[in-house]
Structure formats: structure tokens, C-alpha cells
Image (cartoon, rainbow, N blue to C red; front, side, top):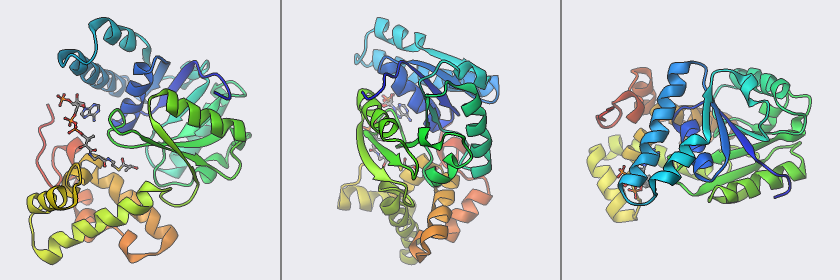
Length: 287
Ligand code: 3HC
């Protein structure tokens, strides 16, 4: 690795952040996870414990390895506790103003040469980095949902990303057991540039063809070999996240297929956000 990463920070412990923190501790990295409220941090801790624990129950991990992995995780609400981190992955709310505030605070909290990575899926990494004194330390590390299971990490080179920062992020993703790819700071990077309009087409077909989400999912699983159907996938990603990413892509590329289908916008407005709210295309058990 270009630079040694010993201690990792993860900021924002929602679905993605918790998954990323899980991957880090499982790969042997001391990890500090930060949430804005203690209760949210505890919820993420419980989620990580649950999924690492399932591996023991299924005979994929021994109890000692589980305890060691969980022992590497510390949770905090204080950004100051990330001071000793060599690399921080930000996985907070997808809002430029929120990220700007956070990155300014992060830059003040961490060492001068610490790497600041963003897991943004829809915003420009260059724009996120623009408020920093040292934007060359910022790189995109875009994980996929569910982060512990999906192998790909898009390593995104922003306009000012330093070469050693980029290489370190790439090597770090490989040390996490992931399959990194090198990409540029273009709208949707690689996967979302393709997947988002594709999922939007799938949702439009629901109405055009008058089929049910169940039949659409069955069609794409058994007719196109997808591991999960599009309605299930959008529920997993989060309707709000998908709508936001679609809007961001449409904003930049102006292709009609990028625009979120009205059905999804209505669902987002109604709080039908998919798995995380208990209802999307399907009803989900939140226990
Ligand atoms: N976090 C952590 N661990 C999880 C998890 C999660 N969210 N979900 C499941 N697991 C663990 C569980 O312990 C589970 O075992 P259990 O059910 O016995 O407890 C174990 O992983 C295996 O889970 P599954 O049996 O569900 O695993 P599958 O073999 O069925 O594969 C899948 C699941 C990998 C998710 C597969 O269905 C798949 O590849 N789906 C497509 C996902 C995809 O396309 N994601 C990309 C979305 S786009 C995106 O993220 C971009 C963003 O910018 C919007």
C-alpha cells in the first residue's frame, strides 16, 4: 500500500456506513464509527453484531474471530475521536451542504496527511472536496449495498486527488477483500450510470405493461439472470436514495431515462422508502 492505513473512521452509520464499518473490522482494521446520536450509533453496532454473529451461527467464522472483529469497533458521536484515523470513509446523508460542513470539520479533526474518502453515489467528489484546504486528500470510495456482500468498490479520482491518495484507497479496498476499479468523477461513476436508468426503465414497465412488482422481479430473475428483481433491489437501496441519485444524474446528463419515474417520487413523498421504512414495493419485517 502506498501509505499505511492502521486506523479507519466511518462517518454516518446508516445502512452503508454500518456495512462499511463491518467490512473494516472483519478485515482487521481498528475502526471508529461516528453517528450524530448515541442511539443511532448503538443501532448500527447492534446491526454489525447481528451480521457478524450470523457467520458464527452458520459456521463461517469462529467465536474468537467474531469477538476480535467486534472488539476492533468503537462507536462515538464526537468527530474529535477520529483524530487518530489514517483514512476516514464518509457515508453521511447525500446532501452537498451537509457533506461540506462535515468535511470541513473532518479536516480540522484528523492529521494533516489523513485520507478523506466519500461514499457518495450521486454527488461530485470534486465538489465535495472543493471546500477543503487540502482537496488533494479527498477520493471517492463508492461501496455497493449491501456493503459486506457486494465485492465492487469504485475508487473515484476527483480533479485534485493526489496520486498516492488514490493508490492508497485502491489498495485499502483490496485489503478489505473487495474488487476495486479505477474511475473518474463522472455522473454515476460506472455502475450507477448504467444501473439507475435501467432500474427506472424497470419501474416504468410496471405501469406500461401493467404487471405486478412480483412478476417484474420474477421476469428479471428468471429471464435475465439478475440475483434479485428490480423492485426488491430498489427496496433494498432505498426509494429515497434511488430518487435522489436519479435526480442528480438527470440534472447532469439531461437524459429522460435518468429522471425518476413519478411512481417512485410518489412513494418517496409518502415515506415508502423500502426496507428501511418497512414498506416500499413490498412490506418488510423490520424486526
Ligand atoms: N448487511 C450485512 N450482512 C448481510 C446483509 C446486509 N445488508 N444482508 C444479508 N447479510 C448477510 C446475512 O447474514 C445473510 O445470511 P442470513 O440471511 O442467513 O443471516 C448472508 O449475508 C447471506 O445473505 P443472502 O442469503 O441474502 O445472500 P445471497 O446469496 O442471497 O445474496 C445479494 C444477496 C448479494 C444481496 C444478492 O442478492 C445480490 O447480489 N443482489 C443484488 C444487489 C445489488 O445489485 N446491489 C447494488 C445496489 S446499487 C448500489 O448499491 C449503489 C448505490 O449507490 C445506490
